[in-house]
Image: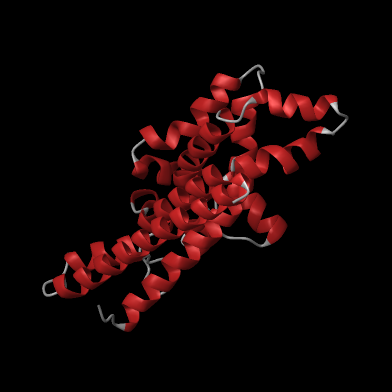
Length: 230
C-alpha cells in the first residue's frame, strides 16, 4: 500500500479534515440532539428537518449552497474573511465545513437515540434533590450516553473521510491543498495508468474506516464496563 507524495498529502489532509470536523461538530451535535430528545418548542420539526436535510439533498447541491453562502462573495464568506480573516472556499478549512455539514445529521441521530434511551425519571430524581440542570447533564446524562457519543463521533469521522460531492464542489480538487482521499481516487481514475495508485488509496481508506469502527467498539465496551462498575 505504498503511496506517492501526492497520495500521502491526500491521506494527511483527509485525517486532518476528519479529526477537526469531528471535534468541532461533536459539542454542537450533543446540544442539538439533547434539544430534539428532551425539549418541546416551536420550530422543533423545522430544526429536525434542517439537521437531516444534507442526508436527502444531493451532495453536489449541498456543496453549491455552501459555495453561495460561504464563498468569497457570499454573505457568510465575506463576514468571516473581513472579521476573522478566515477563507473557506477552495481551502482545506472549507473541506472541514463540508465534512461537518454532511456528517452532522449522522452524529445527531446517534446521540439522540442514546439520550432517548436514558430514563428521564433518573434525571428528574437528581433535579428534585437540588442538582442544577447542567450538573444533571454532566454527571448523569453524559456518562450514560457516552457510547452514543462515540458512535456519533465515529460516523461523523467516517463521513468526513469519505465525503466527496460537497467537498469537491465547495473547495475543488487542488493537490496538496484541498485534495482529500476520495478526490485523489477520483482524479487517479481519470488518467490512464492511475488504477494502481487509486487501489492503494482505496485500501488506506478501508483501513482508516475499519480502524475507526474497531476503536469505537473498544471504547464503547470500556465505557459500558465502567458504567456497570465492573
